[in-house]
Amino acid sequence: MNSTIQSVQKQDERIHLLSILLVEDDECMRLSISETLSILGYNVLVASDGKRAIETFKEEKIDLIITDIFMPDMDGIEVIRKISQINPNTKIIAVSGKFKFGEEMLEYSLKLGANAILKKPFTANELHETILSLIK
Image (cartoon, rainbow, N blue to C red; front, side, top):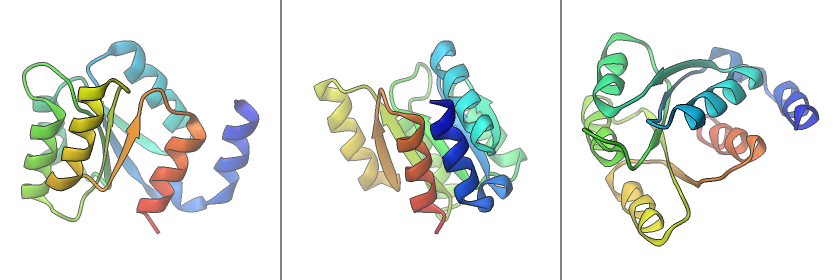
């Protein structure tokens, strides 16, 4: 996987200018994704829930949000709604597991303002390609 990360990292220098807010309640998943994004060269901020994500979004310059759908307190659907109200130009990637209800919610998230979806588990390359497709 390191060779994949190194090769995609060299493809596009725009990534070093991009600030990504990762919203993920599962600590292992949050660490794994944020580490991958950092290795790829992105500036990464993290939030463990939707409420913290909204606070961070209001305080920081965020270019793109990656949000899990199923989280306690404020889920990803609500995060997408609120971010879209605050700044409809912010790019959003919704992520969730591959179980049936998760896939339905991912499709629904596109109607609410998400620009792309990824089904867990996804590879570093899939994540990177999805991000690049949104920042063209």
